[in-house]
Image (cartoon, rainbow, N blue to C red; front, side, top):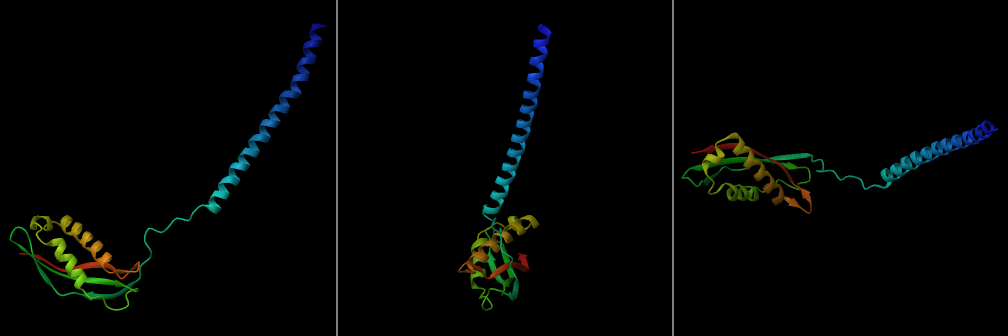
Length: 154
């Protein structure tokens, strides 16, 4: 008789185990569906990424007069550059702001810093940043690039 009681308990537990498995499966499916829906909602309402830099369209090219700049070690830098304006520039930009930025950047600089390609490019990047800031009017960039056309150290 004891064996019969054990069989009855075993048959009673079997459907319960199957019920638990079904419940776990249903809960897993519901959780996956909720997670997917939550991610979809996040994508729908998440703030859109702002472009790092707006696409600039090239405008006119403005060559500037050469300028001679005193360097710290008794040498001189003869610099001639050209400004690449954007299409936002209402007219050809006056070069005075760019020349002033160049003079303030390179004045009293040691010629050894400018004799290497790395040094020249480093300071060209700094000059470009200064020129772009100087020619930005009401958040509209009027200059997009600066080109050296003469760069001579004597």
